[in-house]
Image (cartoon, rainbow over all chains, first blue to last red; front, side, top):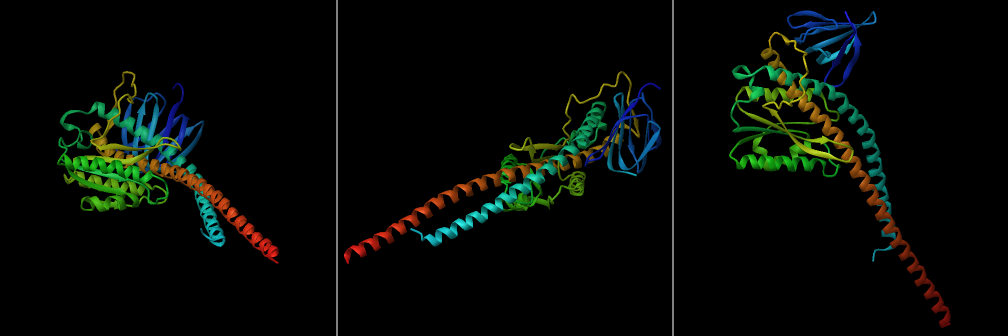
Length: 86
Length: 289
């Protein structure tokens, strides 16, 4: 898998995370999914649950309530209604 | 002419006023910085949301398109949301928003449209109540710091009215924060959603996959977009308010300074005139002896 995935997590109040990561796991409305670099364009609504971000072997978890995930060739964007780092 | 004592009292009172305006200016400057950060931090969300909607809207067309996006096809029932601040002492900040809104409202009424009004902020409520009190649907307070919950409450109210067929078109009046010295009263159309072109992302030949489907996502995304737009308008207002207040208080401080200088000059002249008068009295008294 070539390169890194550009990931940004934004809530209405602020941008919680923006940067290059290796993998993101998120709770989709119709099932959890993982995004690796080079993922096909994909959009889904999110349900409540943890978003796990893996970068350089370390994992950060955010609790996300409602929102959307948008995967484009430019990267993954999660628009969360409400999000906190755990 | 006023007595010396009266003039000194006057100077003291103007000095006290100047102290207050100076303090308010400094408080506004400090709060402005925070409000500006708040508006800045919220920008990525609103921008991405707009981009996502633009992407989706390009793919959805025809009868299946959500009404929030394409409208009901009528424009007889209009809702105008007017957002201002709760407090005054900020120069023409609030009244310029209200004036713009009032022109729009009277224009719409003249066209025979059914106009409803929602206000956010005490100033909008107070200034519009006299003229259009019977058209009020709801009034919200802006609060010290714009909170998402207020925006959500407004968003839910709009969704409720829209679904009940009470409104066709929704406008939002607020003040755009351009810079510390310029805030521009602006109208934004919330429903039907304005899709800004050019924001679409190049997919490099691949097709989007949707879960559940494009319409389903749009249907949940659009109401949220309304809330987001209201929230960002409130943040812009908040930043603009403190900027306007800072400028107004700076002016007031300067005016007070000018006034103090003028009063001091007058007081000194009066004092000198009094001394001269007393001297003349003494000298002429001595000469008479």
